[in-house]
Length: 186
Image (cartoon, rainbow, N blue to C red; front, side, top):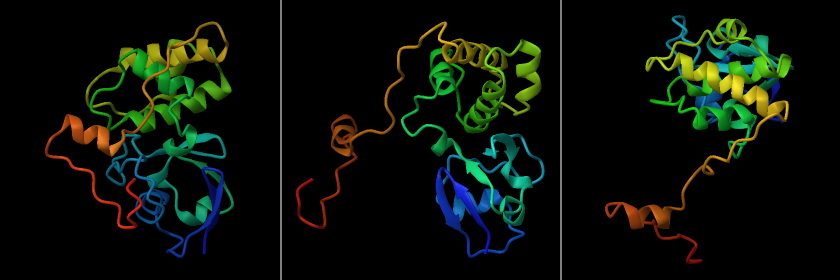
């Protein structure tokens, strides 16, 4: 059974060691931020950090991931406070969101190695396919995040993730808060 550390938690998969890491993350670990990219026609949406290096999880088997440190988009920053996540919002570099997790992972790996990458270095590191074509914004977001990492700039925080179901129900009449089966009223 392949063992590894995912988002700082040791895990063991009772799965075929030849299964791509992508499917173990999405189906067994319920880490769905890593997007399925088509298994072979990879566009980078399945990117994760493996021992700090951005790799396509559809191309790595569980056996190859054995004993390694895996970081998914969920583990990069649980509250979306990573400088690149903040810069992606600030630079409006997110549209449909499909490529975003992979772009953030690839960009974070680059910024970890070099907090002041050139445009050419960014373009070389971000091999992800963006269906919406926001490439100039992606470059600006990585550059801006680099300045934040170097403490040369700051970004006002983007909204915290998630929304309270009761608040959502007030805004969307068709959505109701499900009753708590334990009867606690929360």
